[in-house]
Length: 365
Image (cartoon, rainbow, N blue to C red):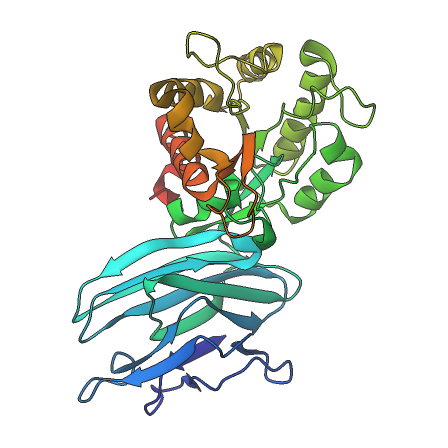
């Protein structure tokens, strides 16, 4: 659909040239959202796509497209110097995490992403980021991994950085044959997610052989009428509705037990604040023969290994001045900072690999 050649030289065959002055314009439908940290260089004697590049230091590039799934084919590298590039997608999803490429080497990466509200936005960062070329192609048949969950899963907004949900980091673990569509929302329970119409949004887009990962529990414990469910009755009943949607659409549901909070007892051992909600998910998985990723068990072991102090590096714990957007500091025992969310996403992927589901196993990095 689009072929972009980034840099200053003559564009590659059939490519659109993107230089350091290509500011986003809705009339053309692509460009950098700001040029303040964008620069272009050319290395003499190199080929069209590898001889020049853009250095997009904390810069965002937007492409306007029709809502749907798209595979991005990226070329990254530098003939003279080592590079390190991270890329976040639309809604802050981690697509490429600190990829280092030695001088003189060029690597191609393929990533499938959802277009949201008619656009794809890529934000580049890293100590020495580069982008040489990018192709954008429709991928309507890509396997879709839908995520239904709460704030521990959701794509956290940029103004809350380094807040991140594990679902936000999951795309970096997924190959280009599949895409992560994260519908998780902060504050939702298994009940309110449905009553607000979010499950219906997933149902409308789900196709045969897709997957849905389902993690609730944190807000089902709340006592308000909009969210509260009882573990062995209404909680299981609402979770079963997600399963029913998947089966109706010939997709595969995967239950995920709720990740633990950071609360320790006087002996330094993690306390279980979810109780019967964890048990209820395990029971439902067994009763309905549903694949289960026991993130509660995995996170319990990991948090106990780290202990009360070590887990501060996973959760949103920051001293005054440590996080730019939280100058007074923050102490949050429920939500994760980005590095912690990435570790939890890795645990989910390990749990998915252990299930041996096909073709899902083929899509996991």
